[in-house]
Image: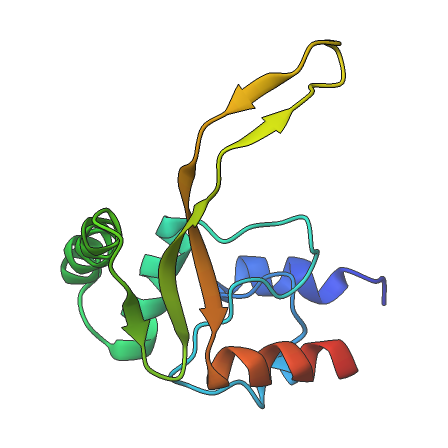
Length: 138
């Protein structure tokens, strides 16, 4: 059997994780949505998240399709005035101010002033740390 033979079979059977062998999904916590499973170059899209959440919760996809963007919009709205968004056991989103500095772009020889700006920082929670630790050991 070729390396990706199970992928072709899963893709045609409507499997949600086409790049992952089913045996690797056994230990995944049901409350935690794993973002990327197979090839590290691939990324999970909003549509993939909506599909997975709809299947796991048994809710209609149209309902999940309205809730997920609202969740993202609310997180962005709360972060804009430099608030903190805490999702217990998953992650904490917060903003940090980077100080103004002098920089020199590689293609230009003169120095330029870069103003202070807000950056979003994600601090992983317990479930995310456990998932990353489990993935790095395998």
